[in-house]
Length: 189
Image (cartoon, rainbow, N blue to C red; front, side, top):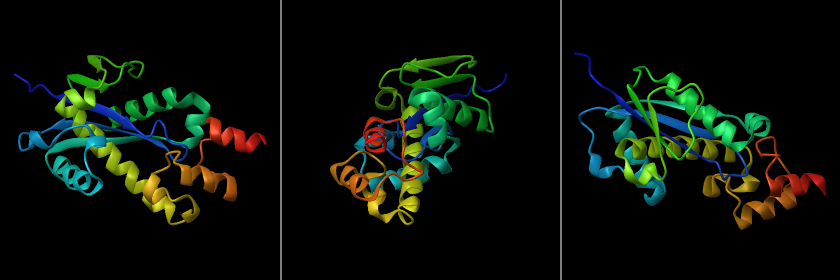
């Protein structure tokens, strides 16, 4: 009899003003310390990095990304679903069941269940949340070295007061989401 695999899927970065939206798909292996797994937003930056490394050692995982251009083309929900679909397709082992955080799933997916607040309720979704968040945070930290005026190493592209002030002072970069209201306003004025 073949083994059953359940994947958890979550995305991060939907509410940001800059950078891609990133999803992770995770299938946990036996060695995982499940007590470490909870919503990534409720774990400190340093601890999240440590837990992400633990999850990677004890799971099959993959990342899916939708670019700033794809966010503009498909809107944030469409781009989020695209990044989820890519993460699921990139898994080396195909899951029998896919559990997705939220109430939307990519089109064409079979054997899935959407779960609102799944990153708080379901350990395998929490694991995906942590991996996606750490991946995206590292991406934004790297990007901040080229675009130091926007403090992405601290705000990760979210619309903090400092980020909004920097936008007004230094303008919009190619990494900003031009369809998002604060950015669109700046470009229209």
